[in-house]
Image (cartoon, rainbow, N blue to C red):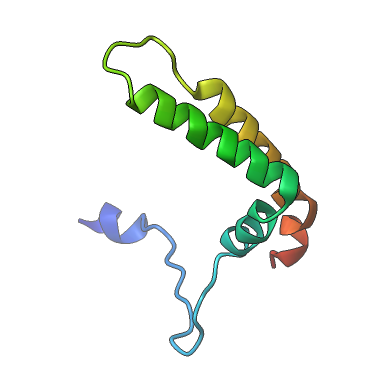
Amino acid sequence: MAFRNWFSLPVVRADDEQDLVDPQSVLREKCQAKGHIESLYNKYQECNDRVNGRSKTTETCIEELFDYVAELDHCVSHSLFTKLK
């Protein structure tokens, strides 16, 4: 029991008065509105609808998903680290 008291994980507590907002979520919403990222998302949704509309298919939308997520993360990465403390 003495070991458990000695070895404890640090606890981080936020002020109750502040509403914490994840800056990455805010930046993702802003980046999603950009034309080229929105078109990649639409391309992914079209693929997803096509695949879900078939009963037997080997097609997946992994490539479209990766293209969309990579471009979204690239956009977010430009300003994310300036927002972190």
